[in-house]
Length: 335
Image 1 (cartoon, one colour):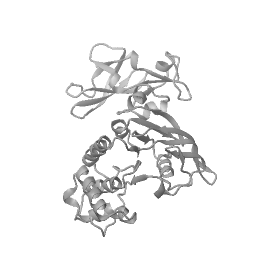
Image 2 (cartoon, one colour):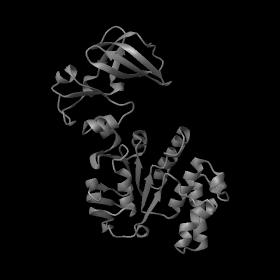
Image 3 (tube, one colour):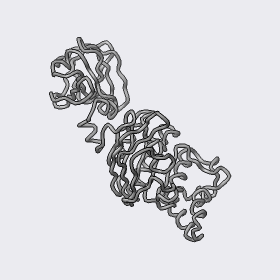
């Protein structure tokens, strides 16, 4: 297991700066997720830790040892890519054992490691197959198994679920969560643009935006106490309602934020009156889009069996303890 420290790390391509002043300290055995929109620099940061991208400025330390100039193979890291990166002409066993053979391990040791990883990921019956005979989810588990056999100090996952369909994403996410529990001493760093993956997998989340760190914290810290309007809008599904104008000004703010699940809907009484534009029924939940007089469109999350129809007049009441207020720069202000 290993600590990973990033001290004033930056990355530039010529005159274009894509990451600046990144300061992070990742603890041994921690599962940390880098999350943010496309182009925010999260995959570049991961590749810098792996040694696949040069560090333009600052320092990377693993277990206190400088790694800026260390070759990738010497960093004690295994990386799982979104494209699986399997050798098509090799069997699953050969794919999982290839790196160990290159490291000149004993054949019995190689066999034991591959079989242990295969058992952990429930792919024992696939070891004689070629990648083309596997589903996307199975290929990703082979890629993860290949990383496990190396017994790394640090696991790096670069959007490993993005090529899978919705059902396989859920199944493989559960596999990765289980892997983290079965390997509690291994530090894991996971990159995604999907905040649901981040919330369900992470011990801590690092939110990146425009090449800088917006906030670092546990999933619930980011959900309940976002450090900026960007984080408030990025974490949570469905997205937080952001309201401007009189409702924000009444609280001395530029923007008033309230999550859909923190608004009560009633047909008779409430703080805001509006008319239902659209209902989205998802089974356990229903999302109700309401045009509120003098405020605009507000999204409300209610119990799935509640009867609300488009065109109905309704009343909404936001939970006063769950309001988030932001200034013109998107920074929190007290109510």
